[in-house]
Length: 330
Image (cartoon, rainbow, N blue to C red):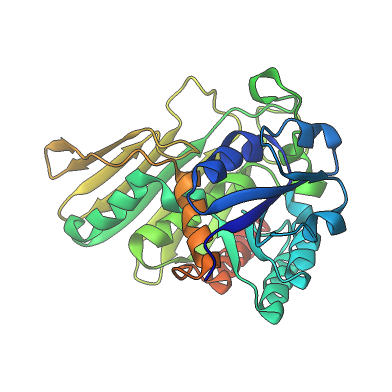
């Protein structure tokens, strides 16, 4: 066991800057010791003192006190970075999806297993306090029949966060491996299984290219079932204006229905309502999901607790999604 875990951030885009870094700085027992990106300007925009800043991966991975790496580079770059971190004996929390394709995803999972290092997938929606509370409520809903998720946003090709410089790689098929579906659907698939205690095992997808003029899908509808027969539907999109209602999670059971609104996202806001049949507002904590995620992974690296999500399970969900997006069958 160690008292303080030294973290490195590889990939200094807006999610790392606006969500991951503030979360890490707020976690007891975590310290940011290194930053890496191929773009020096991206590193310069990271507001943290005392961390090594480098565009050289080898230098980044040999930073004294580095125990864990958060990988937030474009999807196609996950494999090389995770394999290098594993070879250096460093634990890895890798952003979803695991990779742009199934082969790279399997390779990075196997690399961590061979090296004996901890690997986690950064599904921050597992840790949203409303979703944690909803998971506790599921047994009271009776026999769950359906999970319905809407997770949409507005992402044109020239999008920038708050007008700041940004590389919008999520609409580049070479680096992302897809569009709205590969970016947003992994959260819904993971969350459905996390809430239910059983994963989606059959999945189909219809892709949409309707609003934005770029080479990937800007919307998708995915439908599937768990082995236990729960129906799961996901509507994900880059073509829904942010001013519209666009984030909703429903869990339907024979004794009640839980509805979370505006909880799918990086912040701890939104609402949770239980219908049985009259609506009752359900309170939940205000811990940001990124902070809860990094606190849990920090504790796992430090040896204080275990990490509850097996990489093999995350890999299976990734393969299932990619098979559906390619029009095949699992």
